[in-house]
Amino acid sequence: MNQKLARLLGANLTKGANKSSKKRKSIVGTMKMPEELKKK
Image (cartoon, rainbow, N blue to C red):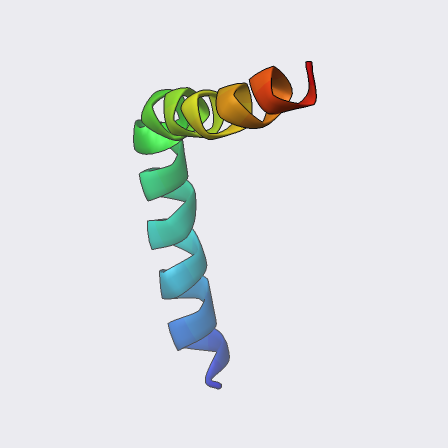
């Protein structure tokens, strides 16, 4: 890959992660909850 493309993709990923970090955390939480309940 070109370094320029890698940098652009990295910047886009970091921006997207910052924006959707809260959404992603909530999704991960909902995905982990059933597993924890099943273990109990």
